[in-house]
Length: 486
Image 1 (cartoon, rainbow, N blue to C red):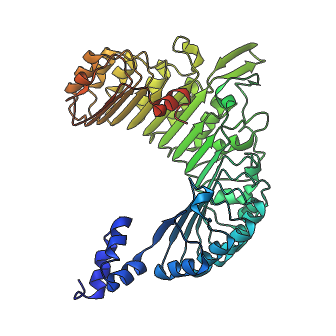
Image 2: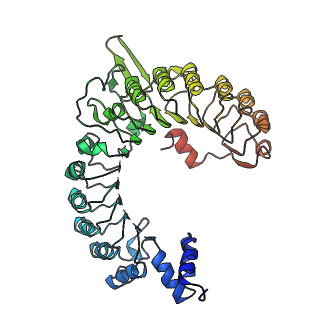
Image 3: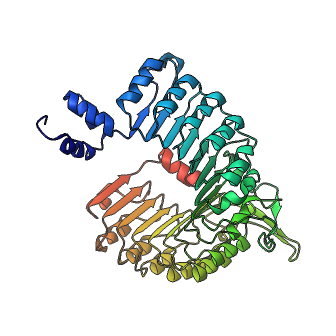
C-alpha cells in the first residue's frame, strides 16, 4: 500500500464508510493514519471523550477537515467522568473551521456562554440541541446573530428556551430552511407565528408539544365543526416554499395558531397531523385546494367533541369526515402515501370515525396510492380490501387492529398487481386459511404477522421470501395500538 501514489490511496479510503473499518485502517501505517484523518468528515463522541484541552486540540488536529460533529451524552452518569463543557466546545468551534453540522445531545455542562462560542463557526449550517438543560433563549439568540449561514435548527426537549427573540431575529435576518421544535415547554405554537417573513424561505417545519394523556381523550371542550380559519387572512406572511409540515399534539382553539399554515402552503409534498385538536374539514379542504403536489399524508386522530349551534347537535368523533377524503381525491392527484390512525375509537361504533367506506374508496380510486397504513380503522372491511386489490400502484400495505378484515379480504388482496410488502398486526379475524390465500400473490416479497391470534407460524412460513412472525404483544406493538405509534 505504501508504494501506491497518495492520491490513489486517498480515493481508496474515500470508498470506506464504516467507522470501525476506518479506525482499523488508520492503525496500519503512518501514511494511512494521516490520509484517513484528513478524509474523515464526521465524528460522534460521548462519555469516552477526554475533555482536557490538550486532548481536544489534538483530536481536532487529527481530523482537520471535520464537517459534522455529534456530541452525545445519553446514558451518562457522574461515574463516567466529566462531560464536555463550555471550554471544550470553544476548542471544537475555534479549531474546526469547516464545521457545518453540530449536534449536542444531553450535554449538561454546556450553557449559554458555551453556545456563544459557535459564533466562530461561520460555516455552521445545521444545529441540533437535544436535552440541553442549561441552554436558554439568550444562548440561542447569540447563535442566531453569530451563525449567519444557519439553515437548519432542531430544538428537542430544551426546557429553558422560552422567549422567542431568537426566532424573530431569524425571521427578519436569517435564512432558515428547516425548523424543528419538539417538547420545548416554554415555546407554544402561537409563538412560532412570530417567525414572520422567515416562513417564506422555510421548506420543512415540525412542531410537537409535550405529550400528555389528554391528547388522546375527548375532554370537555367543544369545537365548531363549521368554523373556517381560512376565510380571512389575519396573519401577514406566506409559506410558499414549505414542502414538509408536521404538527403534533397541539390545540388550535380558541385561537387559530398554526392551523393557519394549512391554508397558506402551495408547495407542500408531505403533511403529518398527529392529534391536533379542533381541526375540521374546512382546514383540509383549504389545504387540498392549494397543494396539488401533495404526495404523502399522515393523519393520527383521536375523539373530539363537536357542537353546532346551527344544527343544534353535539357529537363525539374524529376531526375529519368524508368531505376531507373527497377534497383530497379531487385536488391531490399525486398522493401516494396515506397513513390513517385512529386512537380511542370503538370497533362497534362506526360513527366515532368520520370517514366511511364510500369516502375511502373514492380516495384510493382517484390517487396513485403506493403505501397505505390503517390503524384501528373500523370502517375498513373486506369490501375495502376488494377495492384495494384493483389499485395498480399499491406496493405496501400495513393493517393494525382492523377487526373487520377477514379471510375473504385476504383472498382479494392476494390479487393486487404490485403488492410487495404486507403487514398484519392484531388482526384477529384473519386465520390460517386467509394467510394461505396470500401464496397466490405474484409479487409479494415480505410478510409480517404480529399478534394475530388466529394465525399460526406454520401457515405463515413459505408464503413468500421474507416472513416475520410473532405471537407476542410487544411493547412496540402496544404503542402502535394504544398511542397510534407515538
